[in-house]
Length: 325
Image (cartoon, rainbow, N blue to C red; front, top):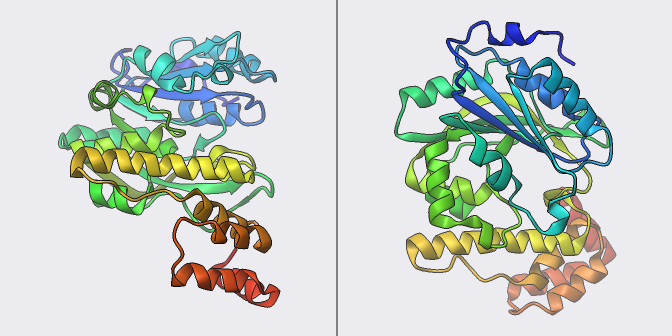
């Protein structure tokens, strides 16, 4: 636990009405949650902030650790402790249901319990920008990637410049959730207009960023403020082929939804066999990749080349080395 008192955190605040609500969801994050909470509490701001935590009935000691922080920082740390796991009951919109509605801040910051912040000026820097630029709805930064299995940082950083809505739609998500600060009124408009709870999307952040980018400008600060922890079996980094295919399919459904909403046309069709084929290539299974390529809804020159590559162990090895798999 961070060596600081509640009074020290609050000493530069002008009042106790939060300007920022930090929203954190957690489940079985016992090894990580303290680092996440310390990253929130080390923030140096001239405005009040609150930390809203939702623990989804963790079966380890995550809730016990949160209770220790709640006891020491009762005016800042505001948890909800579920007695039954909500996610397993099909309630995927955790933040929308339990954290966002109780947020008192003008701005929302997000960070899950297994990620953490490393820049003590993160919130102040982002809020200063948004306060001075009312035409911007969100501000985000870069994040380091920590490979949990090896304990080493990746050379690749999360987060890069997004020009506008079309760039984000056609070139994919490059906004790290743990680095974002955005306006609550823009969030409320998104929830009311898009109503993501009934869409069945497997991620909650990308559609939000798309809406924000369409309705306002978004600002990228080229600075590392946070650390994203890459776990072996997260939704976006799963080794389970079907989970990965479902995730990719959900991304495309989101892109199609926003393309049809604002451009009145589909982004493109999803071919689950093609998606599986590329995943099998990534996971070094050329026989299954070849089989999936043969089942694709369309057969063009590019597909035929991939099938030739998959039929030869030597060509397959060269291809993987070239692609950096």
